[in-house]
Image (cartoon, rainbow, N blue to C red; front, side):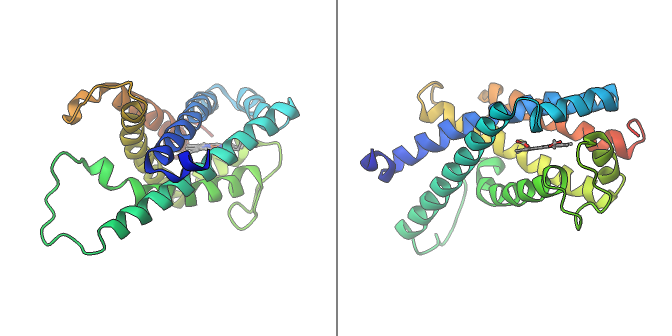
Length: 218
Ligand code: HEM
């Protein structure tokens, strides 16, 4: 077991499997969030489901997410360190061959997403007043509207969704490769399934802050 974790391939498999768990949550969370367009009752019912309806389920999901995010980030960090120490001197000339913008921004995008998740939980789940002074526990709809009436938060979320797009696009493609599901596809346009998942999630989430900012949700 330890040997597996210590190998680079082992870390990539762990990253892939934990990534799949996170994608599953993100897809469900996006669908739940779109209910904001159906009014406060419906949206608050979804938020209650997330937070307290079946408390054992809530904690099972929370623990699974926490373990997944931690393993995903630790493996990514260790793989990055390994790559950097394998090549401590930068290439004199660095021409990307088959890499895409998405693959090259994966690490820093991941760091931004990590900061996003911490602030996001602070804002909507933990109710940190310095992030949202008018936060009311149990009133998820109102909290979301209050947050996205502020352009700063709309911008912060849209940038996060942009990184999520890149991260999901490259990440889901990479996991299909690591687990041996996808054939060799150096050509980025062959990555249709990852592109669809990434676009659906990103557009779905972005509609929420945009819906408030444009006055469709109030
Ligand atoms: C526009 C985008 C998003 C909106 C409007 C949104 C909204 C919310 C709200 C209102 C809650 C609190 C529910 C409650 O406790 O009452 C919540 C919880 C949460 N959100 Fe989001 N979310 C968004 C995007 C994301 C993304 C992209 C991620 C992950 C990458 C994420 C991860 C979470 C997690 C882990 C929780 C905590 C669930 C729990 O309490 O166990 N959210 N979100």
